[in-house]
Image (tube, rainbow, N blue to C red):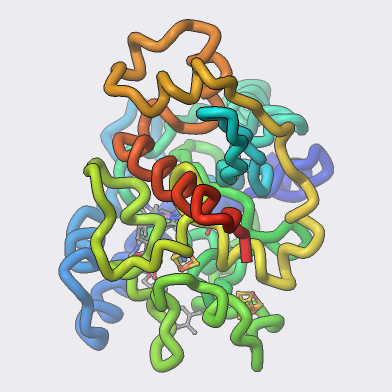
Length: 310
Ligand code: B12
Ligand code: SF4
Ligand code: SF4
């Protein structure tokens, strides 16, 4: 298939097709990185989970496709309880308005007589995106697609299609980061360090919002909370997202009964169907600490403040 990335771009999709041998290069780069950098326990655990081998498949794996999934920047959620309204942010719901990327790739490959299988193990995906030429690292350790911004996730596919012209490169930082410290200043927990590029992921609010539990650790400033899960601050403040910030998902309102149910011990699967449908794009089903996260956000409003993206 001639230059799939160019065809995909014309169709509104961002992807790269690299030779499968690049996975070996990634392994060597990560091993070198590990031997020169001091990693915390969380980082060592992540790196130990990386796999670099293509699985055994009924076709000859020649290439790896790394593709961006578009996200909205956020959705505003309005909860209601005891006569009061609480505005909380839901980060980055998937934006499939331009079509589903997996469906797109699958039908393009099928048309060309090729096969594909989605990777289900952990690869160093941001490096794959950056070193394949698709994206650039921001200082906040999130990757940005030029002209699109950082509100994207990535999916990886193994295929027997031939690779596009190989444009593998070292890790690069976006030019906009030169002399900029905006994300560092806005990170509520000091996870973006002035002395080191690698994020201090043990201080990243996104990690704590993802976990189960009834209380946050005491060192996390109460004013940090603003989101149902994850965190938006270092992306929202970034000048490279000025345009992307405006692509918000429609707001969603939860009435008193729905809010009370979400704060109750009712398992997600037992929530009324209509409420589950409302929650479906918001990852509530995979957020075991949702009640804690909501309570932390509500406490800000009860104290006379508001949840803030900055
Ligand atoms: C574990 C994980 C987390 C953990 C830990 C994150 C971390 N940075 O370690 C937590 C829960 C905190 C997290 C949070 C988020 N995550 Co996350 N996460 C992952 C996961 C599974 C692994 C990340 C990882 O490898 N970390 C380990 C460290 C060692 O690797 P690294 O962060 O890439 O660091 C590299 C750079 O620092 C680089 N480097 C080092 N020095 C230098 C110097 C220079 C100059 C340069 C250029 C590079 C460079 O080398 C390092 C090693 O490769 C990936 C999926 C995947 N399989 O890759 C998703 C992933 C990275 N997450 C993603 C997202 C969206 C997020 C959040 C934005 C969600 C949110 N809204 O809150 C936040 C962002 C937090 C942040 N500022 O990074 C997306 C990123 C999409 C993007 N646009 O880049 C991914 C790729 C998931 C996906 N499939 O789309 N995440
Ligand atoms: S806020 Fe500035 S330093 Fe941080 S990622 Fe954006 S441009 Fe780079
Ligand atoms: S996601 Fe939030 S806590 Fe994590 S680095 Fe960005 S601003 Fe800091």
